[in-house]
Length: 71
Image 1 (cartoon, helix red, strand yellow):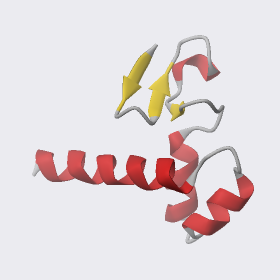
Image 2: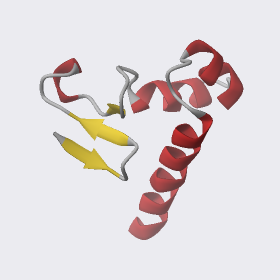
Image 3: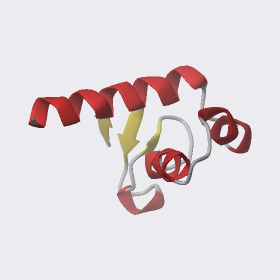
Image 4: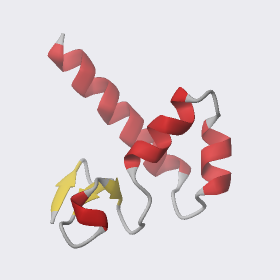
C-alpha cells in the first residue's frame, strides 16, 4: 500500500488501486470532481462524511504544492 502525504493512499486491493482518502473508500478524484462541477467543499463533506475537513484540505494543499513544484 502506497501513501501520499499520509491522507491519500493507494492499495491494489481497494478500488483497484485508485487513490482514496485514508481509512475510507472515497476516491480523491471525487473531491476534485465536486469542485470542478461547482460544488463546495462543504457539499462534498456532507455527501462523504467519512472524509474529514482536515483530510480534504490537506489533500488539496498537497495537490497545489505538486502543481507549483512543476512550474
